[in-house]
Length: 310
Image 1 (cartoon, helix red, strand yellow):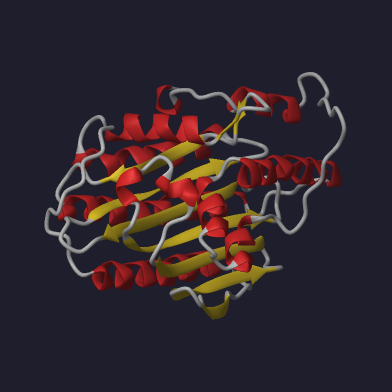
Image 2 (cartoon, one colour; image 1 turned 30 degrees about the vertical axis):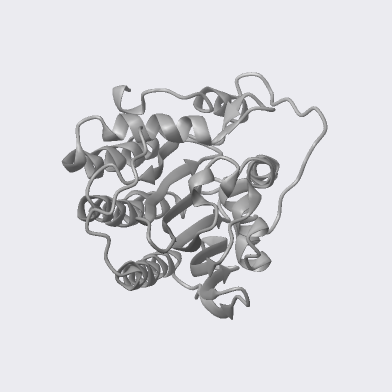
């Protein structure tokens, strides 16, 4: 997708900030209701370089072992080298970034881990047009995949994309498959979803409307899966496999995730950045699942494919 930097009706960032705050509220409410007993504890924080946020974490719920839903708005006078190395037009600009990011680690291995985020970035310099874009998406990481759940997840993604163009789902699904890919493991992180960055090829209102649809789409896609799977019985062996596969999640976030890198290099709040880590994970040397086992079948899902054609 070609990136264009346009001033198309860029409004006050406060309008975007208020939407992201309300989205955090709605997501936390929906997840707490699906959990049934857990509550999100809010931690408000300030960043000395500029900005702050509110981190909400639910731990040891009936369904959610640990989940974090973070809102932040941060700013600065200088971007880290990781940003300006590939975007020289950002050098010498003040910047602001805001968004909502979340990762949910359920207790039951039959409920997939899920991640979502939506974000806005703007960099400004006196006498020049601002540079701005949106980014975001959501993806699903099952341990014991169920085709019904995977299809529902992608159908929801497809349907929310359709009003914005017939090819948007395919483009942003492909981007997701390629981004959430563990090169050293030669596997996708899960069954994908949507991912986009540098979104500003439409006018501002259209871009913002798409981000709103993605935010609501996460709730519509994920909560029904929780409801279907939260009472499924599981064994200690399945729990141990879940913890083993969570290790892959840690590997991706610490090695490849651009948001983690940007947050740490820009002086972000470490606790909020690393809230995506699972509360428990394990590694096992040269693990190989039994042939034809449910654990072995997961490998069939860790390859990019057309889920809606099944």
